[in-house]
Length: 367
Image 1 (tube, helix red, strand yellow):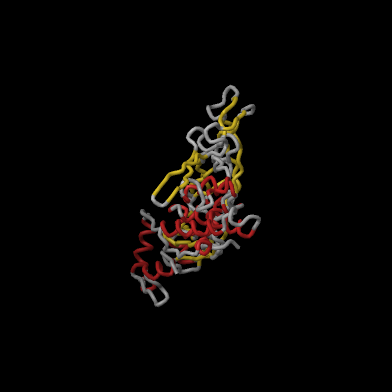
Image 2: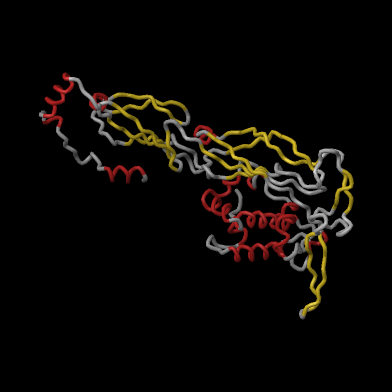
């Protein structure tokens, strides 16, 4: 089971952005590989701290994590699918320590690898696909290194990707490192590029990407497929493919969190005599029994027939709302029948203690 991100950084859920950044910096310095050479435990803690910071420092990701936990990033190759590697950490978060250096360690001479840009796509899912989970194969146009492209060491930074400057201050000599403006931090520049490649030696190709989408996702949720964005020049790492979920409207079912709602209309005679009806669910059709004398507005709860929780906390319910349909026109024989019944005491409204009011039904629905 993955460790809680807040516990990894040693902060509360109410921590401010500044407190999150400060806590991460403290952990990263403590477990930095240059300070703990050969210590695999320290390296693992270093990765966990970066993973936690990547989520909690982003307001949107933090909100999704607070609501759904680790499973908000699973299924698409995000953190739940394998975590971060050292290249991700040094390329994404080096600047949090001031110009790419890590505290007093200066990055340990480690070359900062450039990361390619992310790509974003939208995937439309039916309610059935959301309820059961699905694997989608999507065609994506992404930049990759063109075959035949060669690179040479950048003459400005000598392949480090950074330019170091030493400044004299009242506190002494201070060393800062900034991204090389010549190569953009790649450490290499184009030596030869084939026809059709851009200035970075990249070309656009269409690729089919398989995306595993877990059950229970919601409209607007975003998954990440690591390494399926645009590639970077030289020895850089590929960006990510960000997958936004769009939930398609169902013909009969309406979603509310993990619960589903279904409006079932029956006739006067069916309400009085009782009946059975076949209705749609996300797992196929089911037949339900309607007792005689059912009242309009009654709610039947089919437990476990809703949407699975994305956090793995079971399934929601299917709430069937009974609506007794009143005909808008009647023939003479029908009118005569109802006129006689209107004078029969048996047909007069006489709610008992078991007949709940509208507000009581709403209360039950959310309990």
